[in-house]
Length: 160
Image (cartoon, rainbow, N blue to C red; front, side, top):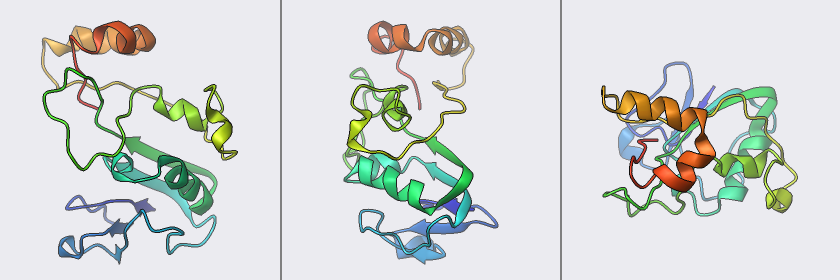
């Protein structure tokens, strides 16, 4: 198991990677420096929680994840949801991603021709800050994600 950009959120039993040596990762490495110090087909599970939006080249990052993933590996990705209504945008983010951003890597996007590496999306979910007021929005956004992204995201910004 690999935990990319672990920060202070280490996963027991995983190879925890971060560029900040102060957080004491198992491997200190800047993910923008390719190739990563791992063998092809090495990991059956990869966690990338709130990290890929910080990488300079998103396509190269996903290609590298594909390279080190074993056949049938599971990739868990979370990213902050981008909406122009979000009052806080992390200045270290190089990409603003939405519900449909991953479609680029499944072949289900018209611009997916920039890479031949393919992933299968098992599940995607728009997550809101947990509150009673957000519960109905959460249900509607996930039932109608395209309508949410096009019309409602500015009024009801998601968490990730």
